[in-house]
Image (cartoon, rainbow, N blue to C red):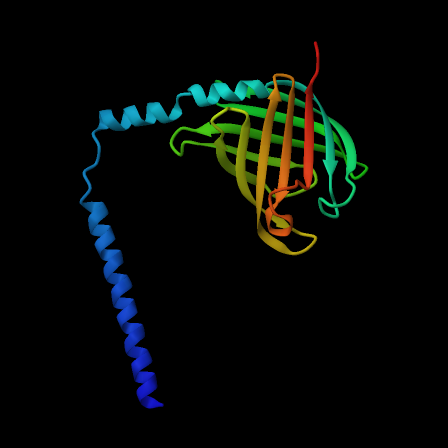
Length: 208
């Protein structure tokens, strides 16, 4: 028994020394890196903050939209509940983000939410976050646009107070059907996979 404890202690000590050594080596490696010049840093900052072609692709979301919301509360195999809403989308902060203001109803109650979608030049990924009056959490997502420019696919995590689940993997897909029609789909990947959505919103552009 004593020999076993001594052996376990030796193994633990070796692991501590190994991890500590790797940490010190990494710090030395980082410290040895040559910092870019001030001019180079300013150039990189300018590039990271300037809207570009990826931001232009968000402009198709701008406008006033009628929304039909379908929710499958008991899973995609059941019948959805259907509600209506309106979404006002506009470019903000110099075209860096699309701000979405949604109003409607959900489960017979007034519903309102605000979302922002942009493109992170540094990460080279589309990013979004969403807040609404039926939650105290912020939903954040990251992802990409397909080669055809027709589908934004992002991923995020969501806590589920009703079941106690935390950090559920969620997939979000926005399909650009045409200039006047879009769909937004939410997939509960953990519970139902990513073939059928648990929520789908069809947006139809309001004619002026």
